[in-house]
Length: 127
Image 1 (cartoon, rainbow, N blue to C red):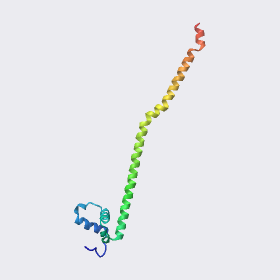
Image 2 (cartoon, helix red, strand yellow):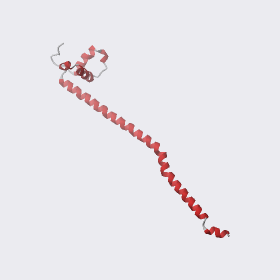
Image 3 (cartoon, one colour):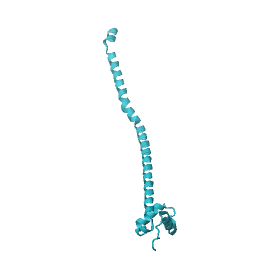
Image 4 (tube, one colour):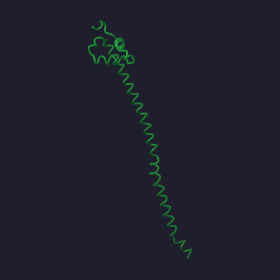
């Protein structure tokens, strides 16, 4: 079959393909035409080149949008994961920061208690 005299826009060519293959009815026109032309390049003459470049630009815009959405979703997921990990580390940080101070305070108090116990003043009063 010879290509039509004026090349078809992407939507019309996709309509022809969808009419012949009804199971492709849910497929995006731009994606369908790109796949058909990639598999059967002889049909390139059937489709208007300006229409192809416009469809390519639309698909590229959709891909760029999907990439931005994926990056935002990845950022949100990463932030919540980082927050969860920080919350999990709180007991460890408290143990590392507070426990040495408590131990030093206890040692200082014990040292003072022992020192007061061996102070000569109390021993002199008893004898």
